[in-house]
Image (cartoon, rainbow, N blue to C red; front, top):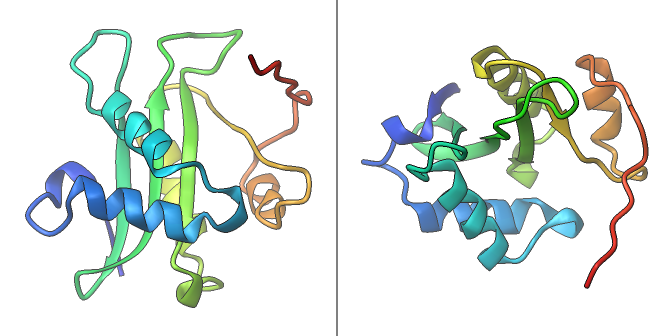
Length: 143
């Protein structure tokens, strides 16, 4: 297994493949394909206040996992980076792929990293093991 930046894998993977992979393997925590695509558009935006990166785990050119990190343009009160998506192929979970993806994403990111996680998400233990701390519960008002 190897982990590579998505931008270096465009000869193997397309945006639609990444969107479909995330949609399928995020399971009950998934967003719509349209929202996942918006996130990828943000990552590859040329706007000064937007950007980020995508890391992909592959084995024999088969996609095993994806992490999507966006740059917030903030510092201090809001971390500089936000880990939006992390997904591992259901048949390959338990091999440490998610952990490796997250560690490499943290190493690549400039500055602090935040993520949202549901209280009942089994991955919460992994995030805590990797050093993430719960700062507060997020509340949202939806219009």
